[in-house]
Amino acid sequence: LPPPLPQPFPQVSPPPLPHTATAGMQRRLRGLSGTFRNSNFPLTRAPITMGRSPRQSQIVFKESDQVVSKRHCTISIDQDAGGVLVEDCNSLNGTFLENGERLRGGEPRLLRAGSRFYLGSRENMFEVE
Image: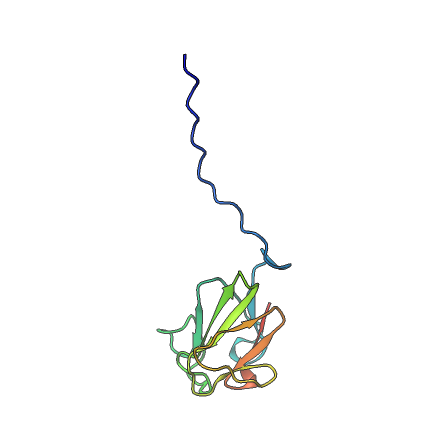
């Protein structure tokens, strides 16, 4: 008898390689002040939009938060870089790093755990965890 034919191996994806010391940890966005003080939002690679419009944003501010645009900024995980991307959506009042630096619209900025940013005013401060 001829030898048995080799059986194909099942296609199994290898686990992702850890790129940083925090690989595998769930990233979150934590509200430090304003409407979302003490709120936590899990982050994924899929962008989450923050703003006043419930049609355009997943994290929706009150209509009275006039310093926040209807579609203010987007947040997503960059797993390869080991951080979180924050991108201003050309908002009127800006997205700022804690040090006051205004982010340019359409230019994502990589933030690490512990980094803080705010929308329009320091009354809308968030921290990346």
